[in-house]
Length: 491
Image (tube, rainbow, N blue to C red; front, side):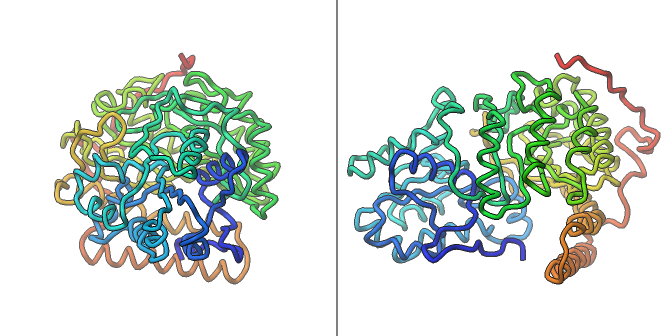
């Protein structure tokens, strides 16, 4: 129900594939290599015998990213990312082909999970890698263009480096990034890469900023539409930054981008946007709403990293996140942004970090206070355990056994909020989807939400009301002094 099997043709080519794999496939095909994306269930048709190299990619190979570690920790279950990846690599024909000389090259955003340093920290990963005969080469970084070089070496039978780290200086230019040849999952279309905010826990900020021209974006959207995709997602690390060289959103760039997306997609969504970006130029959002909302679309979604309700923690771990505002304004910025989003038919998923190395109990209380203010926010609030990425790779992983009573209170409040808002979000999601099958899906999801609510309440994990009788300063939330948000010049 949550992720149905992707449809494939008889040769195992998926009708939609992860966007990153599509870029690698296009680069290799443009360079003349016989390369194709194959669904894991069809690998037996190509090995042992046909395939000389197996390139694997994954957003979360072993379930070590924040969402997986959080939910797996809570549920005490292996995340399905891990289960499916290990199942794929343990297939007898894959193991036999590898023993017979086929090389395995791993890349993608979660390849750090297979690196030697991670395997030294987590022993079962090392055991698994040895069980499958090792990974011949790990490529970390943006490999759109470099992949041709490593594949050429592999096909010639030359020794492959165990671990390659591509630096930001080696990142491909816009011209070196190829147009995908097949449809991407959910019609995802990249508009650029990189983020200048510099949050310490994030690896994305280490990439240089690059923006695709509208012509390049349109070419990729056309590929999706040609393959029957009618709804899509624009992707960058901050949609509001499109076309800018600093942190000031540019209306003259954003509005044509939205018009382009709606020219081809009935429903257009965003991948990510930042609170500070939205609040720097709040007047742009209603104009975007006027472009997106029509007879085919009544809302759109996006992921927003709200991270914390603590100005102190903002200063310690992510000072660039609030620019051009002050850290002291962060809680009120978030609350005002929430209202603006819902007023303009945006229903986001908002992530919060639990267990940052700099976090104190007072920081958690500040976040609890902010959750109270977001009680009527039509969104999903998602606390996630800290994972040592970005500039914090040497810090300790956060896990279930480390959760404090305050952190448990925060996560329970997020669950209560999610159960409260989920039915409204479900109505919005299925409003545009007609037919008996969609009615059946909606009913199934509604039952699932009710089941979660029942289990949560029976275990005492869902409070009947928000905690809001008192805030950390002892005053009711509605009487708390508001921090004025000044009009900025975007410096």
